[in-house]
Length: 241
Image (cartoon, rainbow, N blue to C red; front, side, top):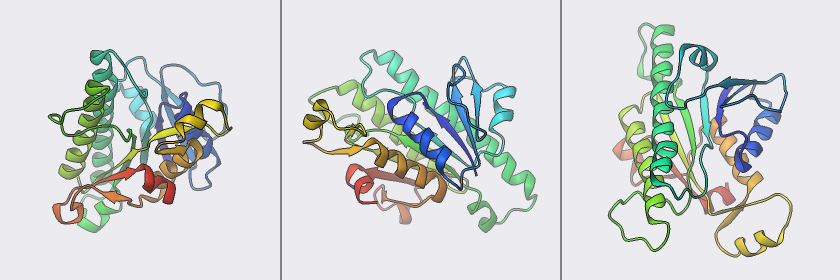
């Protein structure tokens, strides 16, 4: 199985990368990055891009055959709203649209007369790292980090809409963890762990599992009846999975 990973140099993304490299079902990982990575492994290749808003032909060639994407790009908080919107909303949705178009082309060209069953088997799984405080309701009053939480929530809403309109080939898994704790105990995490929280290796493991298996956690509303292809995975779902 071939996986695309964005944000592989971050705290969570690096743990995701390590677990992808160790997973027996994952035979190829393409890391989308602005620069080459220090990690070297036969499974790993790097698609270097200077601009996450453009996917030139050389980058798209490296992404051919990708069956799932794990998107860890971003930060827990970005005070600059313009920059936050570009990184969270624009980078994510440009990638989603490029991958969906490529996946749709591959599905239709490999089977000139595809049936609903064959297309269903070829869904692209997009595992997106959001946060438990992200707010999809853009009008809801918020007490802290209002703008950034709404921006993160907007991404979730856009992914759910995209999954609904492209439900035959695209499936979104939106991870909404609380505080993410380091592997090794430390004083800061003793305090952070008092609230909703999850160990980084547990979160990364569940993200990798969903990319590989596509299993659903908590669905958005009555997703099965409404045809929404997105899954909301809350902190409790991650811990109990």
